Image 1 (cartoon, one colour):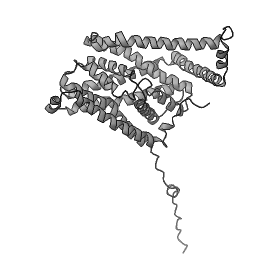
Image 2 (spheres, rainbow, N blue to C red):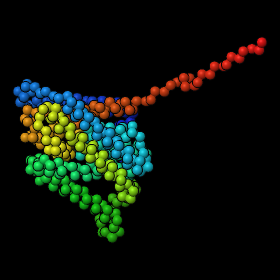
Image 3 (cartoon, rainbow, N blue to C red):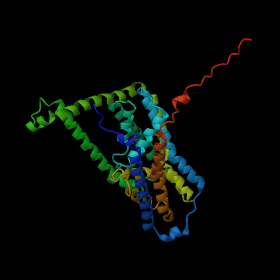
Length: 367
């Protein structure tokens, strides 16, 4: 059976085309960010100049890149657990593919499909690849359920407008969307499980008995069996790995959400690290509802809305530019470079150079 997702876009043959598209996307995005920042801010603030502390810039760069290593470490842990341990190089390539896939996809989709497809390229079945991809998202959400309320409580930021907006407006939408999806899935399950007892219109039976639905049903049945088997296996003998992976996940997200604090500190601005951390989660949560690739334009607007009043007015737009560059465009640029380097063919020596040259020994003649 052919996989549902074909990842030829990230193969060595087609990498140049993807890179060209991403380079154009980065150039347009950076120019758009600069224009947006200049248009929405007072020119006198820019003329006054902003002095950066380079040590904090280096810290921000480190905090931007380190999460890739932790993400790769988590994948190595779980692929080893299911008996398909991958190399660190392969794990890094999957991380880069996930980041680049997320950059050219709406935030609602993200890089999950790319990650699952690249795991299948490592000879994991579709169900196992999907379960490991979903496991990564589950770990992320578990960590956020602990870290974000903790940061909000320590900083006393539960009353902030961004938090109230999320709790009163956004959260109910998410809950209702999940309820609707659950009802649809339950309806399909009931139709297949109890179809002999149900009195459905003839068109429904023709639809369920169509070749396409039969193939989809067989695929989903096998997929669900493999999906469940991974989590059952984790429950039986993978709890220590889960605890280790959750710890690594926590460090990964602490690093990523602390980039903004390092950037504000580099501009000599006031830093409440817990409050900035919690608001980063709100900003990234809002970008899920933005349909543009990589949440372009929407992420910047969400940043300005959430951080207005928390960051001095003179630093708001410059910090937005720096934040978007470090957490998005810089990652794409470095990801493109690394993808090209990692996909370069290994140099091979000619066969004539590989064969040892054995010179005949000269034997002196008997005198």
